[in-house]
Amino acid sequence: MIDWNQGFTPAELRQLRRLRDPHGIQRFLDDMPYHLADTAWSPRRVLRESTAHCFEGAIFAAAALRALGNPPLVLDLEAEHDTDHVVAIYRVDGHWGAIAKSNYSGCRYREPVYRSLRELAMSYFEDYFNLRRERSLRTFSRPVNLARFDGYSWMTTDEQLWFIAEYLLTIHHYRLLTPTMIQNLHRLDRRSFRAGCLDRAVKA
Image 1 (cartoon, rainbow, N blue to C red):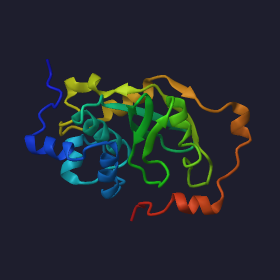
Image 2: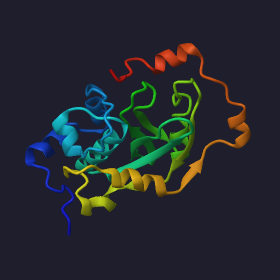
Image 3: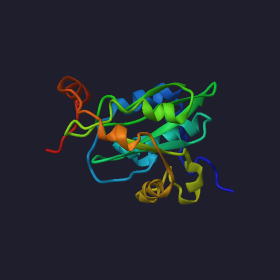
Image 4: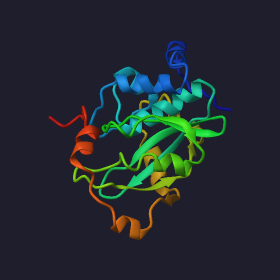
């Protein structure tokens, strides 16, 4: 049987448990700079480097939730003419919330007030846009329990976690919009676009 902590040191586990709750995990991610490198680091590597992007932030948050006694769940959001977004999810009194690292201000934390995963996914719709100001969110996945990857030591390995990213591409996603809805979408207004891009990291 594989230990759930997969070799985290006592100091690393203390660091994760000091985050105390989902909001503490989100604050920890928010305090990290967003990086743009093409990487898929494990939670241990994120702790060591003190930086993360969307995918790494969600995987880190799932590991931190696990250290606090929650299942390590993530949800994949698929977009059109845009990059996908991965969030860690959790439940409180039967309602869903999310933790996320994003280069856009509106695609991060969600309080646990959503009755379904569809409601949670739709809460990202207005804030999910590309640089052409197109609202780009289209589908969401079923929840994925990352414990399925314990045999790969996903929380502590020095190897890249592309196998998780590839798995998320293969699973069923649920459509959020009809073709008619998509056809009738308008571009985001410039003021909302500027607000959503506040402090966005860009390549030098």
